[in-house]
Image (cartoon, helix red, strand yellow):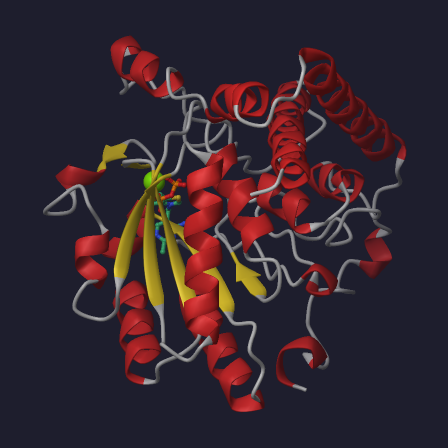
Length: 323
Ligand SMILES: Cc1ncc(C[n+]2csc(CCOP(=O)(O)OP(=O)(O)O)c2C)c(N)n1
Ligand SMILES: [Mg+2]
């Protein structure tokens, strides 16, 4: 990875973290309602995967604010969506879990755990049928690998040799349930092994995630069929704003935070890429400004007109997917 790209990834990771803390604050003030799942701790994965899978369609889970921004959606439009405003990326109709922008090749945000996997497979089928090479990336949590939709999706992707990358964010928890209480092992890539090549990566290391996704995308584009990457990561906050996360011990959190992805990339910038502290601070200030502007924009935007409540809900012609 070159220095410019490393700096860009750092910018989006810092922006992502600041964005999430601002969202948390405004949720507590009552400006944001509904569900809110924060990505704090998982930024390396969310940002580096988006930057690596530059072309192609992305289907993600409900923990997707940072991914959406890294994919190119304006932070203002993301924050306005959380605030339920007309200027939001989904016109205020979707909220936190339904950020969607076909122009950025970002197809959500899905509230149903694993529900987006069959959609992603369908899109990969369409892409193959159309002779388009870019492929699809589906991102999901460890919890999603216990559902039927997961296995059906792997099966079809494998038998049809579809150009799809399955990227599992293994943060070891599905809400408050530790993964080994509901699955026979910690490593969820074992479930995918019979279907396709699997790899594991340190999801707290942005550079490693980037390399793994770039390599996988070039393989799926070359017609090798699907690939599964399992990235081990750690979310710092509770599952959502209604979860205090008390089931994790302070020691466990301390081990997690010692791997902090932003600190790790900062160290790489200073040591490997020979950036100076001034450059790093400038990037951090830019990120702060973008978040402040996003909050201001969201706060000052209008709410949707109630008489237009049913507009923008159903797709009349899914032109971006099938034409
Ligand atoms: C089909 C379905 N079952 C249950 C739920 C309730 N639910 C919401 S999030 C979640 C846990 C998912 O955990 P994981 O996939 O590991 O993602 P993470 O929250 O760790 O990012 C559950 C069970 C749901 N939304 N959809
Ligand atoms: Mg999880």
